[in-house]
Image (cartoon, rainbow, N blue to C red; front, side, top):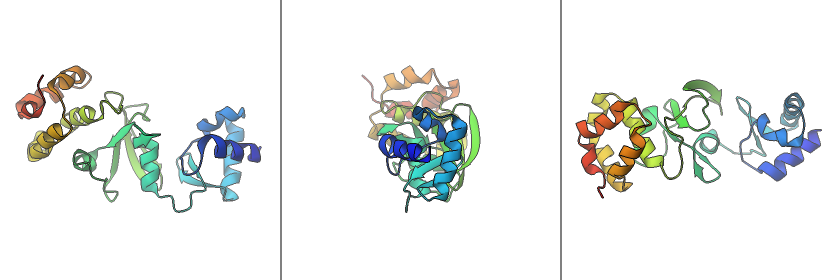
Length: 203
């Protein structure tokens, strides 16, 4: 059973790709058998347990920074999340997150409104996005989420960053109106209240 699990991981998941026991149901084994086998493979050092039911094959120097990104932010080349909270500004500036700060993430992996977990050696708060995140809507999703989640003082302080973000990402007024309906009304209201709307492309 352990060899079956290990071979499946090597063939279907590969090296340095985080996975959970549920990802191994394709083996045909029961979840209890999978967990038992994973515990054995961790002890044999074939796998590394990254925390909160997440494992990786041949981890080596694999860091929790890259593990968090691959699990919650960018999966197989597809955007599924973005850093928020104290790292919202870094996301708007296309900068790497500061992992010294509390980790707060909006991700499609979240199935409920908000959940704080201990994973990858860190305490992480994951939140379900107002709108499922895709490669196409990532930028407008980030902007509208920022306008929803932050207070007026923070928004005013970061207006130049928000305006620059809109221009740099070529966000359009049509996008804002199309996706705004998925967010609380204050997101769209703040676009106009703080003249961020003027930074959007008009067609």
